[in-house]
Image (cartoon, rainbow, N blue to C red; front, side):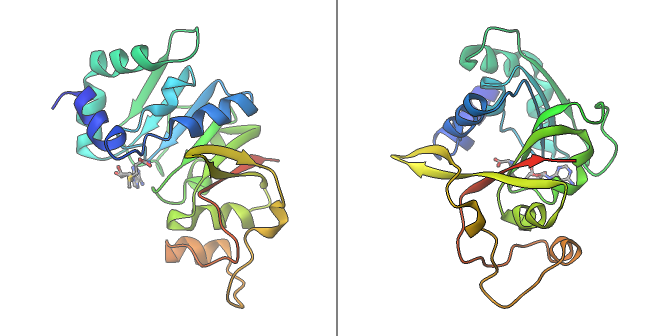
Length: 207
Ligand SMILES: C[S@@+](CC[C@H](N)C(=O)[O-])C[C@H]1O[C@@H](n2cnc3c(N)ncnc32)[C@H](O)[C@@H]1O
């Protein structure tokens, strides 16, 4: 399969492209660069954000990004901005040092791939944004981290992802009488139940 067919199979056919999500983010916040650790071959952010860094240690992801012409063709066909897109792929563990300037990234993405809010926080600029879901507990971890402040939640409105800023204090209250620490959630590697949840969350880096 070529890269276009792979992208079709993994994201379009499964209706899991999340294009509206990235569109909503770039409309609301000033985002020109994105770091996506554990991206697999999910290059949708590059359709909306000119400078993107993808990180994944998976062999399929390495093969996908090695076909640079096909990756560029896909992005050029779908991009919604004027600038020329620029992407860098690191075929490595995201816990290891990445060749990215600390404090330089506008958006850090954490989707189904582990505790990225902690492992890659240093690359995010102050006032930059973290998009995170609670797979592997990462949203719960960010909620306990004083370096992050919850500024929005992602909801579906008529099948489109939208950012809501309503009643943010209602989120991240454990269902059971639990007081998990960041260390506990990182060790568990899976989220606990909360009384109110969203598909994904947006945090701002405040320090
Ligand atoms: C379930 S997939 C999610 C893919 C993508 N984030 C999405 O939402 O469509 C998880 C990906 O994270 C990658 N991953 C997990 N831990 C990693 C690590 N420490 N370093 C690099 N990649 C990692 C895996 O190789 C896999 O491709």
